[in-house]
Image (cartoon, rainbow, N blue to C red; front, side):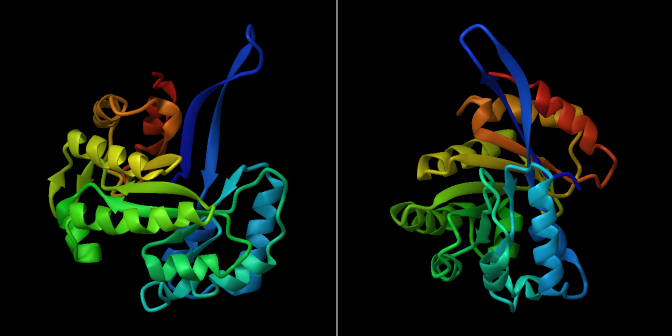
Length: 242
């Protein structure tokens, strides 16, 4: 699995520029939540602290989701209170609903959240028991309250290429869903190939559609290496400019 890569252009002066990409490190959340056994809190804190020394500008540190659904991350509050914080490093946390948002806001160390939506009707109904539209409406309420409280919000989209329930995902649905999340106030949208079925051609086609709603610097890409295509897909994403 590869973390999100944000592709953009940074202008140093009016006459000099350099290309760069940003790695959004999501291992402490997206990686550890998939472990079969609970990772001790102290080890999570140590992992995040070590990652902070590596120069990442964004480390997704925890998830404020009911322990019933993700018991591996039930210690999110303690993690966020005890990690070392490095200058110019963001430590976003995942929230799925108002319950998670209120838990996150009760922790004074939380300044940025991540919210999710799916690009597949089948997956959305299976995962949150809602249609895409209804889930976006609920997510908008969360985003509005978070923004009103001064938090930054990052959006995630899953199933951007294919879904185990619905098959291939229409790039137009990805673009419409991304646009809806941007209009809510998300500063960035992470495009997730959740099942890892993307290829250079399908990623290119999806990005062509998505970039009709906003510029490349508003998006990041999250590729799973299920079929060994993640690095090729990263290259496609890095070459995209608008």
